[in-house]
Image (spheres, one colour):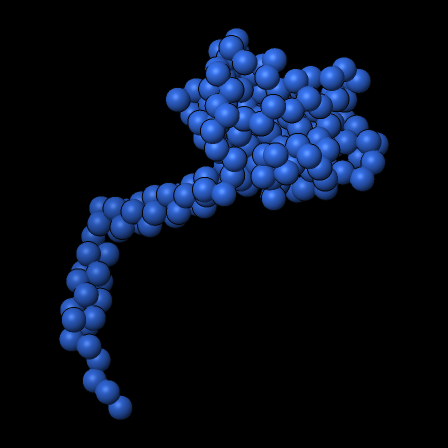
Length: 182
């Protein structure tokens, strides 16, 4: 049987002493939470998502008109890809509405339904989630052009239509707003 590593024993002892005071416990716990938040943020903004000028796509809206993504230039834009069957999309749906309200005239928020089997699924999602934002209907070409492989996926475009940030997965209202406006 091998003896314990003296350096590891000293480190463990120092950690126990540090955790002994209330302020130190709070500091260590806060450091772990911040590290977890940073790791999740790094995963959400992983590099395989689209970069550069946003793909030029024209999609039908849920109301029937055709919308060119290029027509939204002039303001910052949050483009949110979602799927009606996605529980994370449902959890984040309200955040998109709040971002739209808080950003006001400074930015636009557009949602794009993807990976649905029937238009009725999209309409049901919109009704159940109380979606008040424009809903565009993605085809496979739009999903490929934006390299969307998980839902929800967000793209934050500058006023010239360039992708300045992207994220995948649940994102808070504050996280979306900061990525959009900064």
